[in-house]
Amino acid sequence: MERILVRWERCVGCRSCELACRVAHSASGDLFSAVLERPAPSRRIYVEQADKTPSPFLCRQCEDAPCVRSCPTRALAHDETTGLVAYEPARCIGCHGCVMACPFGMIQPDVREGFIAKCDRCKGRDRPACVEACPTHTLVLEKDFLDLRRKEAVRNLVQSGNPV
Image 1: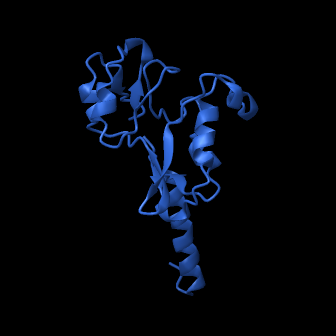
Image 2 (image 1 turned 90 degrees about the horizontal axis):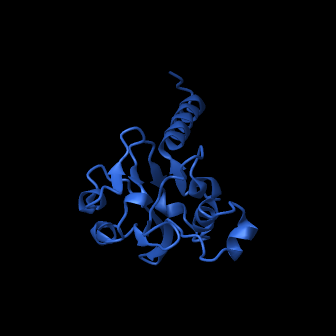
């Protein structure tokens, strides 16, 4: 599983990630139509104030996930292929044990998606909508971040006159 890294210091609180998430999980997949949908599409990422600074919060896809352990019907389970905590609405009985068990508050009650809404990393897309929409690159895929850091390190070595 490729993790989404959050570079807190870059967030300006524009909420583009929230909007992109809602559009990606709307029935239409289109911004203008999504705004009119009822019930409104749920967001799976939240920009909140943390110590007077806007900060995005999203599902951590925990390896030893309390939400998975609390689910009596296995509607939440680890997907061994992707490494994500997957949600199967048909198995959910709406007990909201997962909502109470998530230490980060990233699973929310939802009438539109079954009984809950949680991040699915925009299943079926190459990149999560929140990552694509972030204008300041606060949200970045781990691989992209490591590639950028590697390029910066090489550039710094070349500029210093000490290439390897």
